[in-house]
Image 1 (cartoon, rainbow, N blue to C red):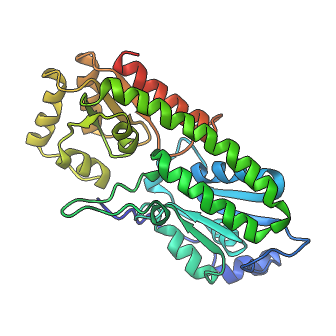
Image 2: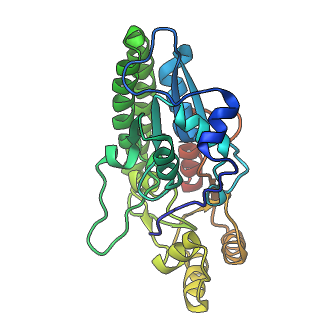
Length: 303
């Protein structure tokens, strides 16, 4: 899988940005008593979880927060750089997904506590395979991340420890309900075929026991933004005409001629299409978003 090193074009150097605002970079460790803890997340997925756990006790900034934006084309700005420079806690996905965060952190002096969710997950690429970095679709990973987040928030502001713990308990209980729902679906639908455009929802589909039938060369090319060979495209299209899959999960934030052809083939074969996204849709929090995703897959399977 490609390293998602998204271009970082900073219109102002950090020093200039700080000078213009009269601000200084945030210090690590426990926050000053008169200073609100600042959390900066690479995407609104992690920003939303941070807000849910922290409540009103901290200030949360999500760098990628436009649900209509293709995350792969994100360009960091001087304002993003300034936010990172003042952060007490930084949340990044890792695994090559948001490498722009490395650049921002290094320019800011790398003083904040950094939560790398792929590292927290413990997931590693298997021999001869690539790591699927879309770990926010993996509920056990989000359980682990939430515990690590509570620890970091408590260290930054011990006075709010009980609030963080209480909010996290409610959030992880909701996560537990989602895990149970996927386990129940797995009992009924394990082994059914599924197709994807990109590996974005694979952890969720795996949890339900679905088997990814997509040619690896197809999903890799789509994710890399390279051309799909005619033979690979033909193999992909036959999944639908041969009734090899029961559901097609389509990343609606990225599109191109090949994905449009595949989408049309799925619809023509009456294979249910489940749109998925990489960032939080408008009007959703993490739990309601993932609940909608699980519901959509369940409906496509015949629930």
